[in-house]
Length: 358
Image 1 (cartoon, helix red, strand yellow):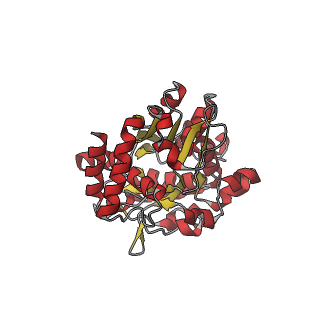
Image 2 (cartoon, one colour):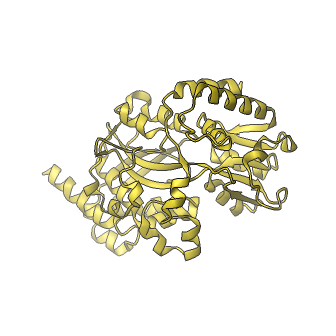
Image 3 (tube, rainbow, N blue to C red):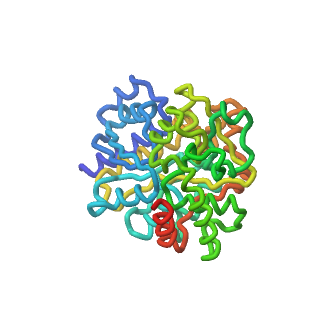
């Protein structure tokens, strides 16, 4: 009987969450007896558990979200697997970590038939190689976007056209980049290497030289969006490699910044909600995955992060200019980004990165 009730509750919540936050308080109250309830523990990127869309979900489902933020995929992977991997139910893994989660056995396949909003995802994000193995879905795509060059508009009156500014002595001590070995791929893109995640020893040696020469120019290697924001707010840096989320947050704080993808192109990331193999709150996890993929909620995530949503229907809810700027339906733009992957020799990348930081 308990199992039947749980299944009924899950079906109810999927129906409610498919509305993406459009459920009225009266409807929630009317179905209160069918709430799932319980905690939902997740580790995520900043911006992925904002109160603007978390609170309606909690009200609809009775599931209470507890979130831990991470600043890099390595940190996310380590925290998720700590203590036997039983602390978290969900992780918003990027493409440089998702296969590591899968091959380590840390996450389980998901049944996309239980996630109605999955059918509205962009075709390239329904079964991408970074979260689908042997035809099994190990999660659902959520948001995606480029790694951008963020700059102070009082210093740069025009958008920089090249990544060379973050390697320039003209801005010594006023540059920041992420504390993340995957930054090696950004240098590979800058150097026009065709396969930035599959680099030869000679290519890695050249990249290491570039990053070592850059090190005296770096104010600090940032470890979180909050730290990045503070560096710009304090006027300590004028240019850096970051994410659109930082631009949004800094503009809200009235800091004069903008971002751009320079002519060399950019790396990018496509994030996946993945379900722990040890999750004790599967019903809440499925409800969240479907809710987070609804166009109404994806629109709210866009407002917080300025990331591109996976659900194509989100474009209909945004001004045409914003939908175009986010490249929601632009598969050509999507294909130009060098999306994060885990390099086959990633241990070597980590060793090089540690040497660079000293």
